[in-house]
Image (cartoon, rainbow, N blue to C red; front, side, top):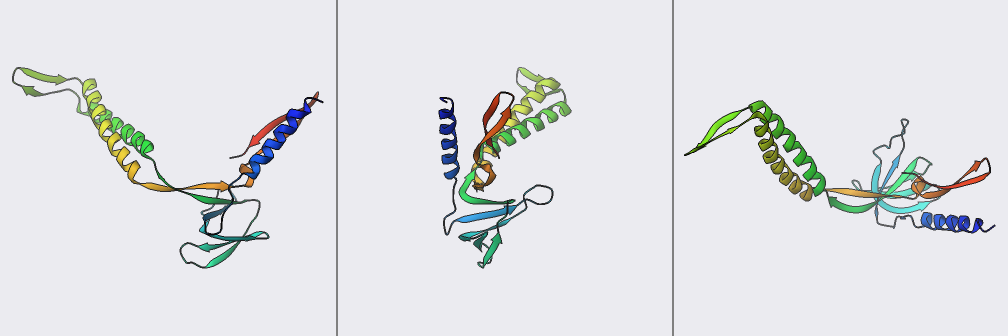
Amino acid sequence: MRNLLPVFALLFCVTSLQSQATQPVVGQRVWVRSSNSTGHLDKGVKGTFEAISGDSLRLRLLDGGEVVSIGLADQTQLFVFAGRRGAPLRGAVIGGGGGALLGLFLGLAVGEDCSGSSGLFTWCFSRGEMAGLLAVGLGTTGLVGGLIVGAVLHHDTWVRVGGSGALRPVITPKAHGLGLGLSLAF
């Protein structure tokens, strides 16, 4: 009997987590998407939330300004606008990695180089040294460029409302009783 107390506490916490899902507010930007026959989400419809009435959602389209009614089904997913953000770290990783790979391949293609001299010294680089120098140089250039581009360019972020993305309990029969777990769908 004392083992049931944690089970009920867990079920209460799961129910309260589900009820805290983001709900759209009148005037908020929303995006309604549905699963197609292959299971992937379609392009969807973006607009301003007006109301939910019965099994349909009313929204004002962003481009035309007209109010449309969209039927809600099990496959329908609703997202609310969460703002715009940049991705400087992602840009730096892509730019730095791309630059380093390009430098590596160019260094290997150029091969040995003994063209540099300054007075008493003559610089000679083997194929591996050239590849390393160009990889570091172009990698650094790509990293800085990607960091700047990632910080300047922004994209929309959306948060899914309710649906099957919530945390819920799962009870499975076992040989000597029941198993209790949690399920989180993405």
